[in-house]
Length: 199
Image 1 (cartoon, helix red, strand yellow):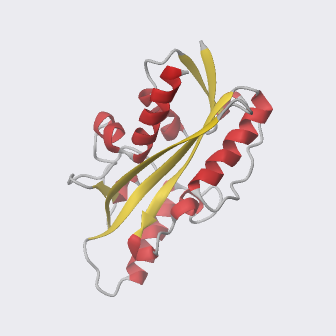
Image 2 (tube, rainbow, N blue to C red):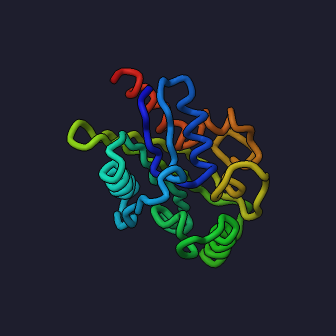
């Protein structure tokens, strides 16, 4: 069985990845199992750069095939913010609610004509890194609307504010199966899974 380290300690993200890669003959390990690891700071200006930085850092400390992702929410009314700063919108170690509250505040401050929602999208870039053998990138995107009031108890991050295109519920109101099928991370992981089946 192949061991793969997921360069994250976010329980919501780990759960999604485990679910979406189910059926592969792999053992997924999270950073919780490597407390000594120091993950490199995300200094990139793009999702791809940050995913690569984290994957390379974890691989070099474990010598195990590593999956890393960087993902975030782009809001049209905020010129694409918070983007790569999504997880740290308020600052390091910010809670999901703190980030959501700041996002709503920024949207309200940016719009003179407040409508019930504003356009945006979730983006995800996953990096599969194995040193000099290969480094592959897999991308996923989900268009939708950001609403001005949090709804739902599932998911994490900005899920309670995001209604995917074609649906009338937020990511936090959808069941896991539906969300994983249409989400940015779900789309990226589907491509990654297809690659892993072949190698």
